[in-house]
Image 1 (cartoon, rainbow over the protein chains, first blue to last red):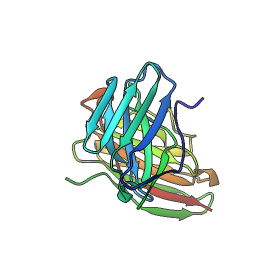
Image 2: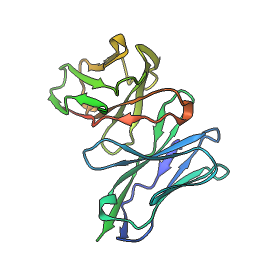
Image 3: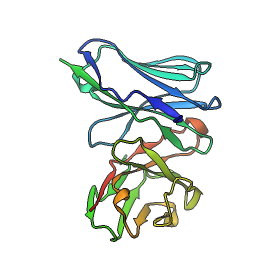
Length: 110
Length: 116
């Protein structure tokens, strides 16, 4: 079992809809999670991090963490074509090493 | 403030040759990480420097890979001799290192390495 798992997609949503990206992890001791966005050929860019159970909102983005069920999700409200990218979920271990999922490709159709 | 920079952006070499990748972290960042993404796979950790010291090199594939960070500033990753399976995108990331498991890593644009 992979440490961090994501559906590779592609996930296609119409413009203005809510995009829901999910991630599960295997280590119950994992504390912090990061969502990165990566446009094709570019560097991963941090969107949000979350370390407490519950929701964390930042503009159109909401990260959700459920430690009991070991999943993390990212909701994108009012999706725009410019949100089309690959979204990477990662957990961080005590040493600072990021462990990534495979990434979910999101396509927002005008 | 300049971000993480990497050089070169692309490198195409033949099997058996040597390649050296360079990473310049954000100024003042003590932590420097190397990651790699091979086609179709997730980004995987290679190693972690704190200043000039190797903190964790558990992800280095084998002894053909050598990373250095002299003086605790920029880092180089040398692959010698390169093999076909070394092809991929090599990312460097840096962080301040003051927030533990909440420490944000900032990524460079990556070096795309192709071994023919």
